[in-house]
Image 1: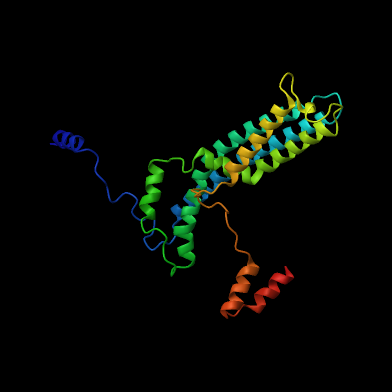
Image 2: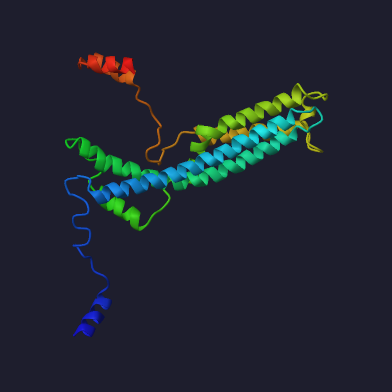
Length: 257
């Protein structure tokens, strides 16, 4: 009988056991001990990937400082070293964009838990944004996938860090080939047999392309990114215009801080 039952179960395939996970998460949204440990683990993973992002940015800044120091240390040093630094910073940008896609996976889970567990726990009367958030989160744990495209990750890192770095490098290169060169402009921008006009056109085209990628209109798919702001002074003005009383004691406490 047991063998027949085993064969029967193998033919039918695995069945769902509704007792698994019972009591793990409270239906009333109260965070249990397991949920707290889960949230702490996701925070830890997000922190590790955040540190990896910062490490790549540090490499890019150190490289840029070294390139600019060497390029301006002597007049005989070639200007195209700054362009090589531009290419190296672009390589760091691509590496960081790939890391950002992985970082967004863990951060999106943290934001999902904050939106559907901790926020309703702090304010039980607030409505849930997604009634099926448990099934959505379970699906993500079963089949983890990247949530944003490589181009969107590039846009994030360009806006936050790399577009200003490229601007500094290009500005320094322009200063190097104009004020620190004996040849007239634009011949001073030549690299070997490549005319200066062609080099200038390539530099402008690449910087323009990076600017378009960073600031073109798009629908952001990342979760939890600080893409908007709500300043305290704006909220105070909205309260005053709507006639909602503000707490004087809290304002006094903020002034003391």
